[in-house]
Length: 269
Ligand SMILES: C[S@@+](CC[C@H](N)C(=O)[O-])C[C@H]1O[C@@H](n2cnc3c(N)ncnc32)[C@H](O)[C@@H]1O
Image 1 (tube, rainbow, N blue to C red):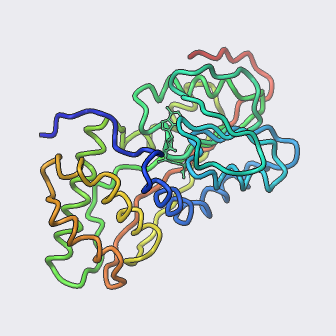
Image 2 (image 1 turned 180 degrees about the vertical axis):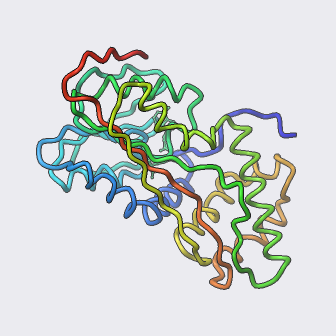
C-alpha cells in the first residue's frame, strides 16, 4: 500500500504543466463553456475563476464581456486582459457577496477541506449568483474499449489502476464529484443541475493526451505507488498516441447551483 500522502505532483512550476493545461482545455472547454453559457453569463457579470491553470476559461468569460478575476496558487500561466492574482483558496480570505459567477474546474477534488471551501464560495456569491464546479468522478470501470493487442490493453489498465491509487493516496476525493449537488444544497444553493462530459477517444486525442502528460508529470510518483514501472510507462506513451487504442475518457461532472436571490444565507468558512 502506498502510504505517502504528500500532495499530488501537479505543479505549475513544472514545464509539463503547460501541456497539462492545454490538453485539459482541448478536452473539456467545449463542455464547460456550454454549462457556463447556460448560466447566462455576459456583460457586467463579476466572475471569479479559481485554480485557473492555463486561463482558457477565464479568457472565455472575458470574451463574453464579463469582468473576470482569475486566481491560482501558482498563476504564472494565466494570460489575458483581466485581473490575475495569486490566491490560495484553502487559506487566503474569500470575499463576501461579491461575485455573480464563481467557477472552479478540477480544483476542489484535490482539497481536503473541499466542503468548507464550497460553503465559503457560496458566501462569496451575490444573492442570485451562480457557482459552477467541474470535477472528475472515479473511473472504477475498465476504460479500455479497443487496443492493438492484449499486452497493450493490460498496460493501459495498469496505468489507470496506478493513477487511481496515487490520486487517492494524495488526498483527492474521487467520489466528491457525485456529492457536489448535495453539498451545494446543504450550503443553501438551489436549482442545482449536473451535466456530464465523457466520450470514447482514440490515441492522440486530447483526453488520451491527458494520460500522456500525467505519465510525465506524475511519473516518479506513479512508480512509487508500486503498480507500474518506469519501463512500462515508457512502453505506454507511444500507445497513447496510437489511434488503434480506444478508451473511455474520465467522466467530468459539472454542477451548477444558484444562491437564492433574496435570503438570509450566512456564509461560514
Ligand atoms: C488540475 S489543474 C486545473 C486547471 C484549470 N482549472 C483547468 O481545468 O484547466 C488545478 C489548478 O488548481 C490550482 N490549485 C491547486 N491548489 C490550489 C489552491 N489551494 N488554491 C488555488 N488554486 C489551486 C493548481 O495550481 C492548478 O492550476
